[in-house]
Image (tube, rainbow, N blue to C red):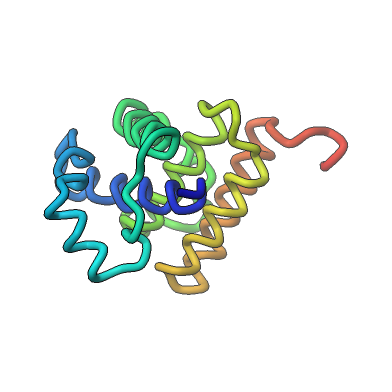
Length: 152
């Protein structure tokens, strides 16, 4: 499974985690019968995550659950012109995932995490929300000093 697909699965699970308040959404999600049902509905579920992909998804879910307040504080800080209640659950999941990757996953290149977050958002959100996500993530990396000086 590609890291892009693993990210997308993680975003869907981060969304479910936030929407339901359940801590262990991954176990239910990966039940063979449930996963087969999903595979019949969406190509994303054609391949069951295993090995490194499964570890990556688990790490993102854990980070987003344990550090949710911190991730949401970054989102609020850089969400200029958007009240928190205006941010959709999907946009929040995309933002949490990307910020967690940038801050806590060493082998996730900054540009890849940001670019893929924006590309994945395009599949689920309106153009205005995608632009918002791009702006928040751009503001975050600049504002937190994460952009190398050569790129500023």
